[in-house]
Length: 121
Image 1: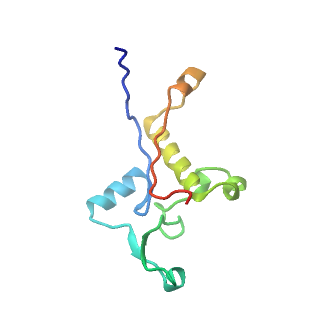
Image 2: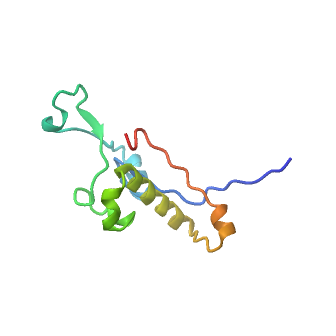
Image 3: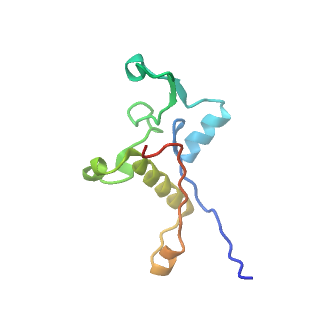
């Protein structure tokens, strides 16, 4: 049997608690929630009034989401916001791992796992 090890060497997070493993972990330990009541103008005609919204850098500096960390500004409108979140989290994971694959073989053996509740919906 051919057994290959899989090793998790880095993590990245973009969530309603903020962006970055450090910020999210600290806020979880502090018992904070990423859920908030949405303004009436956003929820008019919708039964649910509560959501977990990823904060912007402006609203939660330095832990809010900055799309410039994911891709160049000229590409923001070409991509779904979920894709920007995924790229930012993947970049954090690779940075945390100190992984900069420099050969085709190394790149072929690299993977990122992305999860979302309703990304791209």
